[in-house]
Image 1 (spheres, rainbow, N blue to C red):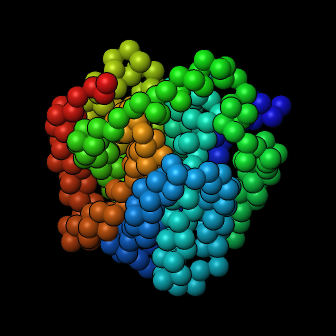
Image 2: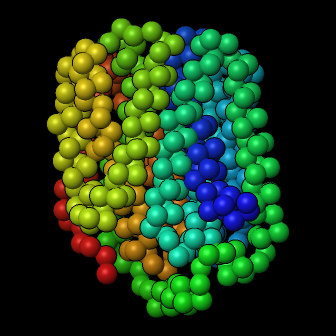
Length: 390
């Protein structure tokens, strides 16, 4: 039983952590209605969630490379989800911002060490394991808005369900990994044989860091992160303001998007085995650009949902390949690379979200979303400048 939980524990914990991250975007219409926020203020909630995480995750990734800090995992997702629950008590916009920031701290703690847990426990099937880990996060982003939609039916107090989920996650972690934190990696990796462990040790001792390629990859990471974050914020807003949908159904639209993302994340990993990591990233950007044009300029329910599948493919299919590329480019610093690809790959886009929200306040939502087009072009061009890792 423990062996099975250790195998599927990392994606489960990733799902639990990203329950909170995904739910925050779905709560934006709720905050707009209850606190009278404009689009700039709404996007600033996401900004606060991501600014600390964007700064802290590379640092915490470096810490994870140097020291074993397994307690970052349960503490991280506990802080994230309890912060979301505490928004039920918020009496001001400033309190929401503070709790959003605290949730970002939890996410920053979680991601680097959780990615390394995949390496330590499943080094014999790292590709599949990292794919499952990425899908777990996408599933969390899909289920989070669905769960957060309960506030439109039951009120803000419904958010305390996130704390219950966090407590269950902590109990699961303690059951599966308690007492394993201080053991050698070879004791944790139940299914890894001696040859696999020796091979991994050799890679770590002889691997090199290609900082130039990783620097180029950072622009691809930033591009995807902006696409991911801006769409997560504005899909429910566009559904309400342009499609004239109900606020209570806006979280379902976001859940549909992230649910597609969970499937397409897995498909992107499988596709990269056939095409290669870089070709999959390039294909994602090529498909995203025309589909986002339909999404923006066909303001009806057919354009909205018709463009969502190819648009989701463009964003989510890159997630796994970018993560693997980062770890290959920085073979000696997998924790730092994971902090960038898995962490900043989600949070970095939130830093520009307030500016997109400001454009929506000045003009309209559709005009603001046009900023996604040059961002996608930059990601595509930079992916063609990269080379396959050795």
